Length: 109
Image (cartoon, rainbow, N blue to C red; front, side, top):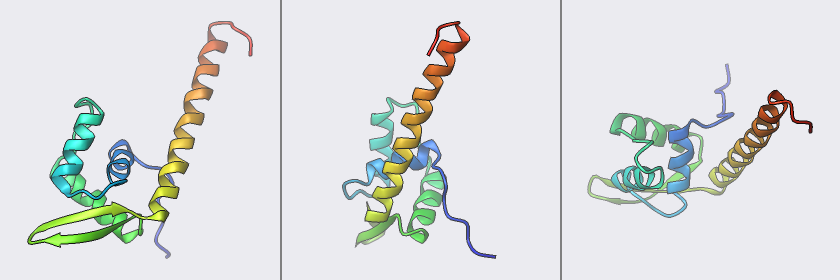
């Protein structure tokens, strides 16, 4: 059975790809995501390294440098496409949600 590609991203996945628009190691990714989301999304090591492994196998990121045990990653062109598609999907959901909530209040389209 062929390996299933990612269709959508979880929040930690989405923010990890955003973080990797510039090269970062694991702790830098964790800090970037924590700061960007004002602490709402916290990447613990097990989650982060599972995401990085999945993204590497899907060729969404590359390891661009190795300094001892410190690995530096960066998003690939394929990863940028995935990130932009997910961003568009989330924007569409938000717009549709706003329309749906207006309709529930009795407003018209």
